[in-house]
Amino acid sequence: MRSRARTAVAAAGMTLALLASGCGADDGDGGAGSNKVEVFTWWADGGEKAGLDGLVAQFKTDCSQYEFVNGAVAGGAGSNAKQVLASRLQQNDPPDTFQAHAGAELSDYIKAGQIEDLSAQYKEWGLDSAFPKGLVDSLTVDGKIYSVPANIHRANVLWGNKTVLAKAGITAPATTLPEFFAQLDTLKAKGVATPLALGKDWTQQMLFEAVLISKLGPDKFSGLWTGQTDWAGAEITDAINDYKKLLSYSNKDRDTLDWTGAEELVMAGKAAYQLMGDWEAADLDAKGFKDYNYSAFPGNGDAYQWLADSFVLPKNAKNPDGTKCWLKTLGSAAGQKAFNTKKGSIPARTDADAAAYPAYQQAAIADWAKGTPVPSCPHGSACSQGWQDAVASAQGKFSSDGDVAALQSALVAAAKQYAGK
Ligand code: GAL
Image (tube, rainbow, N blue to C red; front, side, top):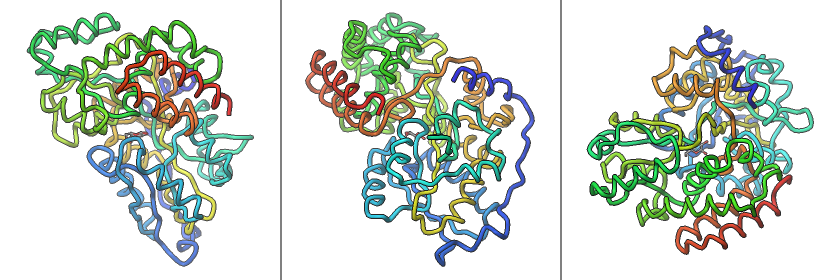
């Protein structure tokens, strides 16, 4: 994956080689008698919806013979959408396309035989060379490519309310965990009751992973998902203890909030910080909140915790030609720009012109280029859906009982059950 980051570096600043947009007349009239293309996501509000809208505008230009149908089911990280999708797939009622994270999560759908091989489309649309090799590998099983990536997001970013931080005399981001704890103590002493905003299960999983990256470093962290790093080790116990301490600086109603609920605490100045993926950049912008700063989570160094939203052609989709037009658009340079400039993510394509992006993404493109890629479990690049669910439920339990040994055994058991599967 390092080479992937490097490829992206080489690409930064290069001029866009725009793909010929528009799907040809031979793209058909909508398959089984319909021109509708149902696109299933969890991007229903704020910056996420803004990103989707950007892509839809490009789709309307490139694929004017088709009609976009919004199948979004609200809920951060697909917390509701994935259940709805699973039952639709089971009932053989797939949407025309759905979002699936690159990596282990996508492999679940491939193994279940639920999505089609897109290798021929990759050749036809020139996508083989458009994306970094490491990313294409995460979309490939047995030599076949099953999905088109829309972006690369970064998960391990700490967002701060500038005014709240300045009032507490904090002018620079913490670069280590001990420094971060000292800042949180200062904020508490200055009357910020809950310095760290936090939401429910999957957002807690993200915070815990950020702590693990600080404690283990990128290589050992990545090894947690391949069986090379032992979940039962003393470093993990240490990380859980630090994470437990972090929870004590967070809002007590965390288990009831989605990521946007926690984000509101930061916007309202009730909290100083939130660890969240960089969809937060787009969301804060969409909500008109400008008083924020961002940095990598303390102690994460140049680790770039990546995830990629990708879209698929489900088996038995009603309008496969319409789906292909959607996929061609989102894989194109114009589609990636229309989407990512609004979504907070960076383009998966390596030929993007960084200057065309907002300030946050320009910084992210540079960081991705020189950073060390590490995967994310709650966003599917590191682990399967079953593993995600097992960890999320263990984290939810830990949020109320704080039992360090019980969390560690649950993590060990989950790894035993799911690693390498
Ligand atoms: C992630 C997804 C992002 C963003 C986030 C919050 O899983 O990849 O695009 O939508 O959830 O909902």
